[in-house]
Image (cartoon, rainbow over all chains, first blue to last red; front, side, top):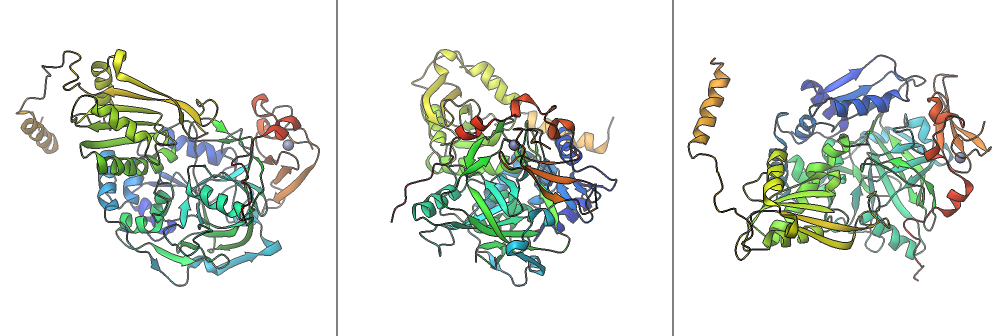
Length: 476
Length: 74
Ligand SMILES: [Zn+2]
């Protein structure tokens, strides 16, 4: 079932007992971030959190950890909450293949009910902002969808980008922006700055759960996030034109900010505790000037806690990172079975593949590093056989422990590109990359003593069914 | 009041709590650090602010530009 906004999704989580409403008074700091941090630590089926009684605020409503468990991620995709991670990724891929699904332009977006413009713009009056981690330079927007268009092709819907970027609140109408060089908004900004122009942007806060997922999915430059959202929802994504910029924004957002990235301006930003589990920042970065705010009545402010994995961001972007990598690899190598790139946004990836001939698996690993996402990630790629499930880490450990001879199974590629946020890179943005070939050698590669593997007995699958049904009946 | 992070003396008020007198959000005019007055001392007082996050004018001057501003093409 498709959810058209954050509110209806929170109700759906509530029906599934996956939303915890905290009604006792809490402090904005450190309670809100600490509670979201704690939700990530209490297990893989933690609930979303909703706060409506925060010291000093009168009408603040805050949703945290909305995507922060496998159960919630499944419900976001309209799947049963107990759906396994591997099955969620496979269903994601199946729906991805239905794309593009054209979005639906819908009238009267609820965020047109309240408008603030010009000198009256005050982010603090609309958003209950709060700090996440001790060393953060300020209050951040870290779960918003930022919409921009290619200045050289302003009418090209496909090249309109919807992405999530961290934004530091620096004033009542001022945001710092971190455009990762590998991402589309950095291309838009470079083109605008080469023309000596500002880059118009719309920032959608508090969105339906699939918009948030696609905004964090590494798509090709000309692929539309809204067309993918339609495929993942199983219904066209409802969109509307933002009144000041004309950019296409989600119909159901809680808050829409509009303004420009000021061309050729850089200003001190950060630090900010990042998904790598380390702070980054202390750099001079672009600035957004907010010129108009549109919002629903009593908007819900949505944010996510991030820090040492796993946190909500890992659930949010993990499956979405696996899918394009698997699609791009299988386009050339149908032998690829599955890709698990859920570790630190794919800085480490595990790929299972059948082999054509000796040396094939490591070639596939190298290819993963040259996909669009791999250029900035895939620092370590573990290759496993087709009968190893890359989502089953004990199986992966078995492959690493028995199939690897460091003498020739470690392929080190010097001085490759990686995102600057990788704390191991030196200088930032440059790192060696490593393929660990944990597949069984096949001819003409004849290394090792792998001729007599022990496999599950042919009768085992029948016994799995038999034991499972006995357990379900409660036989003792 | 000085900035807990860089010790600059130019601090202004960004926001006041909707419930009167509950808290204010302050901002440093130099390093842009922002904090709520009710946060723990490790985030609000120069004395308790952690060493690893402190900044000097030199740190601010040497901060790299990311992404670099490209040349104008007309
Ligand atoms: Zn300061």
